[in-house]
Image (cartoon, rainbow, N blue to C red; front, side, top):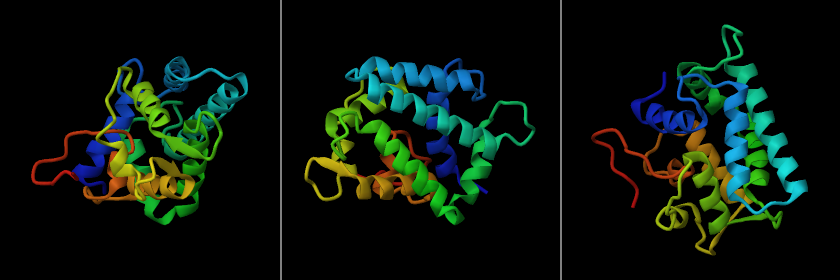
Length: 185
């Protein structure tokens, strides 16, 4: 069963994806998120098509693994049931990490720069966001970029982890930790 910490961080991502705020994820929510993301990034038809493919692939995977009643909608509780199993699904987590890295790496240079990360968070949140405090937490070697290996670790810490001190806690930006848990600084 998910902890309050896991629920809080996953709910933040879930709510960002839930474009119409109806408490359900549907294909149209992923289409809206993809459109928001495309609107804040440098446009390149090939990279745009890749982003669409990745996001709609993520929707398909989420739907297939989470939609218990097969109504083509996913609730937060259904997502959390999958999160509970992710610790034993390292290959699935690694696969989504690779795909999301490709989506975030707008220029295809094999690294996520601070501006690419900021656009990701702005797309998810739907608003301008200052990520200057969070990005250094994610950049474990301090070189100003997030490598594929760093991102895979962060993605795993976010989705399959339960440690509020882990840098991956902040992959999708800052959020309020449950009472009694210390934020990483």
